[in-house]
Length: 350
Image 1 (spheres, rainbow, N blue to C red):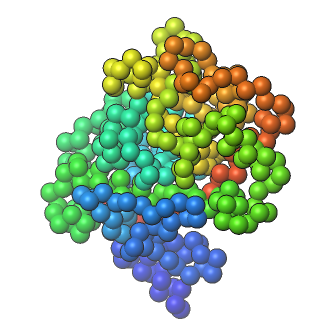
Image 2: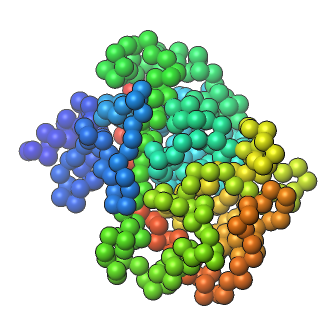
């Protein structure tokens, strides 16, 4: 009887989305707890923006918007189309696909742990997650809409008017409030509690001998992997030229197209390595299909060009060392994001 009551509450009054399967005991728990998402082992508390504080109602609203294809001009593309849970919040493709099957020029980066990032997009042209959330809506390859029309469409939905009234105190919401809700949800999408984190916490059986050797190699002064992939999120958040695409006739110049600084030519954001085994293909253009290919790229010292990062040099790995590095990267696959699947159809605003 108690379970039936809880199920009814989930369908009829889903203020907080309840996911019974989230717990081994089958006891329903809030998908968006009052105090914020649970921080997986190995990560640090989220610092919420002063102008976009967390609330469970706002996170749930952002979750619904994130999966809503009505944000695109023809109702075929949502944020989740290119950043889907089944691909660790990417799309599993070399480059992103938008409306009418149009192909973008860059890979869809993962949403995992964007709470710990500053500049967004591969070239860092968005200073915040809120700003980033607005970009794809007006991109003519991605969603092909206008901010004005998206707001008009959403305001016409009674369920959204009620939710925005609850979260922001008004039914006359703006695109900035749409973006704040989406960004709040995205900050909840975390990856931690990996075998690496458990090893660091004292469980010395969490890593295999190969992964331990790979970790030592990764952290060594020989490879200098940590000069870019550092700290809890395995990225310094900077922009680096590793040579990808620079051997093409008209290479994508990345960060340079935004800053116009000579030193930024061919530089792209250093991605997190969290769940890297689940977010291929790799690099900003998806040109490397496997982690083995990524290791080969760095073993060769990248692709030579005038702006190549100074730490990239031929490493002359042995076969075993290459295998150990790949094994270590696979040990960065974690938990915390798997529960954010598609919302139940009954929960989508109408």
